[in-house]
Amino acid sequence: MQPLNPGGHSMIDGSIAINDRDKTEANKDFAKQVVNEILINHHFEKLASYFVENYREHNPLLPDNLSALTEALQEQQGGRAIMQYSSIHLVLGEGNFVLVASEGQFKGHPAGFYDMFRIEKEKVVEHWITIEEIPPVENRKNKNEKF
Image (cartoon, rainbow, N blue to C red; front, side, top):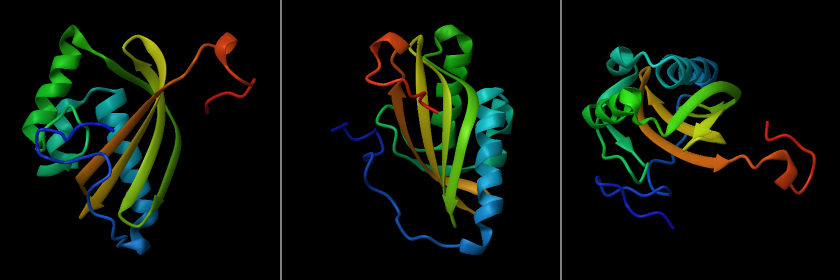
C-alpha cells in the first residue's frame, strides 16, 4: 500500500458522493481539456483556471494545493521529467467524477496514466492517479495492446 501524501491523504480515501449527473458530458470534456492543456501540452500558466487553490491530492508524492502542483510540474519541465503524457485513449465519467486514461512515458518507460478528477463548478477539487508500466511486446502474456 502506498504511504499517505504530505497532506495526509491516501490513494483510497476522499469523497465518494456522485453529484451533478446532468453535467457528466461537460465534466468529461473539462477533464480531457485539463489533461490536454496541462499534462500533454505543458500550459502550466493555465493551472489556476482548472484547479481550485486548495484542491485535495491523493498522489503519495505530492502535497495538497495548487502551489505544490505548479512547483512539481515546473520541475518536470525543467529537465527532471519523470512523467511525459503523449495521448488520451479513454474518458469515462459519471457526474462530478471523471477518469482519463492516457499513455506516455514514466521514468523513461512506456506507461499508462489513469487520472481521476472530482470536479465542482468547472474546477478540479480532488485528484487521484495510478500509473502502470506497459511491458515490451516480447514480455507480454498475450498479444493485446494496453489501449
